Image 1 (cartoon, rainbow, N blue to C red):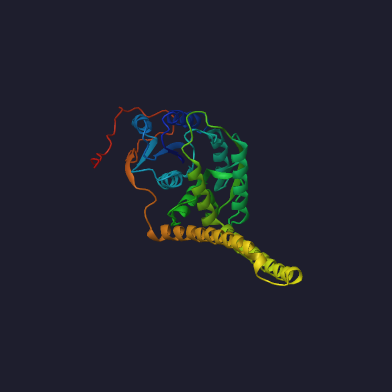
Image 2 (cartoon, rainbow, N blue to C red):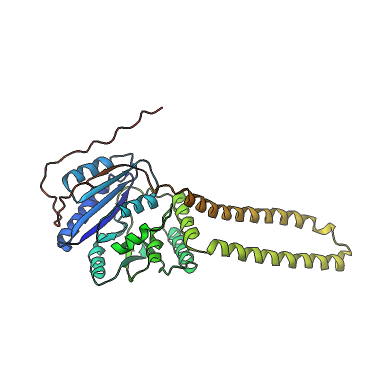
Length: 340
């Protein structure tokens, strides 16, 4: 009997984890009764009651597994570590705890996977979010897909069901900051997409702040596109050409109207000095992004450091959505070091 793994990263999602668990359990019972369900929750060191709720769920349902991180490693590393811990024949790489990506598409994804597609991806054709964020995301994904060597349709996120072969191929990629939505396509395989509406969040607030979004966006651009370097080359060429044209124009104007070359252009030189100084600092920062990416790669640190795993040693899983009958047990957390 085949196993389908669903990976759900969470950080301070006490309002959503029960609903997410119940939605997955009920969907498997109704639409995927012939498959074993493996639901992995990756807790990114939550500070609210999320972990306590996950312990209760895992104690009652052996099909639920929990990874507890030692600290918050960010959403990308956290999710990738959960995917690497999966054992399913097919893996849904990312199901958010707030269910903004619809779990209702999973049966169709599984059907397409059974037809031989190794990558079944969702396309966020519509988004229930503010107009500005929608436009910024649209522009970003256009740039990402336009300049990437990997052929990925715009609007594709981590909401993908991939075959075990793809997961094992991803394991071979040594990347300290994995960008999964592109990584799967880099591994190759038959792929098919399905558009859907990305729903607004119903409970709580998103923990993925603007600074984290910028960091993730830069990671994707640096890792999978030549856009930053090509942009630097293009801007440098244009500025050099404009500078030469401006110098020739100033020279001719000085000779024709002032019969001298130097004094009238002093203010222009000051402005140009600060302008080109800013441009140089910008591209130094751009080069720094690549240096940081190389630095993170050569250090070869683990993607995350885990504090605890729950239910990974249990084998009494059931193809049914109902938890196997067993006495509830509570797994005590590992002792913490005293604060100093």
